[in-house]
Image (cartoon, rainbow, N blue to C red; front, side, top):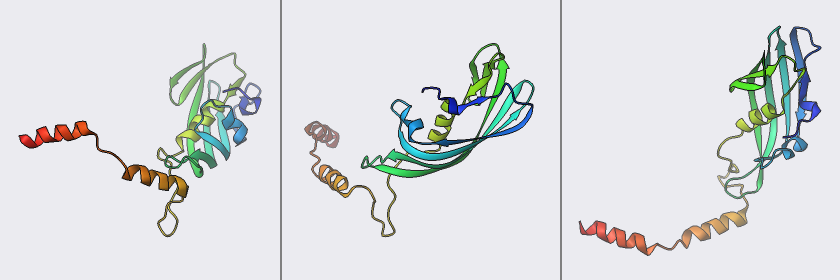
Length: 173
């Protein structure tokens, strides 16, 4: 992902204490990620940073909607995302990840790029199984043409003769 300036926090001039930053994340942000599952979205992220002498404690409040492909019909569908995350940034000799929620940055750094964390946190809020919901009558909201094709393919499933031969052996016992 490119490092757009709008997702970087310049912390070197900030005094210790609480600071709040707001980010609007949309299609341009998600387009920067190669092979992104999220195609579009309107997500608001509020980052509350508690800056201390040797570390920063970042709290992310995330809410909005994203567009992903349906697992059944592959049409785009909207999913609501909402959640909170926490990241601790400490000063050290060089950049490295101490754990999934603790990052170490050099003491000489003057800004911190949030873009990879923003994408990861939003992506983790998307459910694993993404299928259009059913309407009030219990009918799928997936593309009807795709549903019909899936039904046709499942009905015309030919039996593999190798399995039939194995079943015959099993029955002989």
